Image 1 (cartoon, helix red, strand yellow):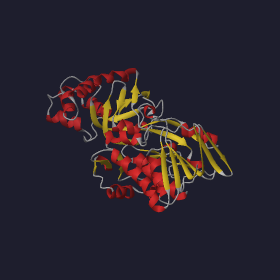
Image 2: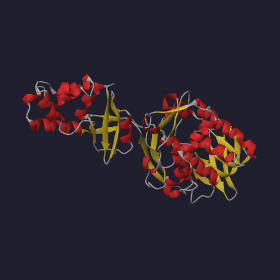
Image 3: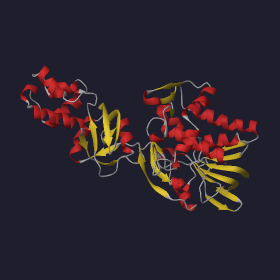
Image 4: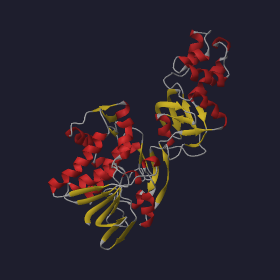
Length: 394
């Protein structure tokens, strides 16, 4: 059972690479350990698959080498994938910040990818997708690659690692890609959970009482700031803005939140002049939920009427509301992380073809690579772009 290409992993990157390689006349075998392909696609975007972001570019990705993703992203763009979507008459819509979703179901994306695999036969290629295929061993010699699954053995000229990272283990995710990388002598950038809720302890634990409360904020970690919703949980902080900064956050560092980012500087002094008998809590309720307004007012210790509070105290309160500091004590880990940051070192790979420099014929694509996108369709776009780069380089 010999193939031109064996692809390990039948997710977004693996299926797209298989289809594209097959349509270039290659014989391709996809080995997927789950009972069906594309499981993470099916749960993404609340079941509607945030399949790309129309504004995706290199600045939206984290990597030890921020330049690595430029080549693949420039050669296969969000518009290219959107053209494919529309060729299948899949209805879609744009949500906030350039996020594109299926109108109906993520199942349409999986069905499209499988149909693209079937189309390989029109171009002299062939794609076989084999599920419940647990890889027992892989080997490499001058003749190519040899992969065994149970009692079966497959050989190929090229091997593509598309098994993702360890995020969402309940979906079958593992660190298998890293084991393979080490076997082939490729370096790893330490993997860690990304796009993940943060946990709070110490004095911050009091905010857990606000579980379920959300607000549109500016969340900042280091030099990056995201203006989206934050959500208090029974463990700490979540919501889009927090998931975004979590990819940049490092243990021991604080994050800051501007609870009223749309207010002009000096707004609290203006409120004092305009309504001296109002309270801070009343003013905060104009932009925040009652529970959050009450908690922030209580923590600031300003319960009396604004007219009775000094301008200095109000300036200090405004400053704290703009830069409210939290000290997360951790994250909710890979179990709740949408993606994995880190992975197989980009220094080991060609940015044009995703091929390992030390091992000709070995390719790495998708989440297994040390390229991590923002929340909002960016990681799917990396899956499509890196898969296309590898398929075109096979």
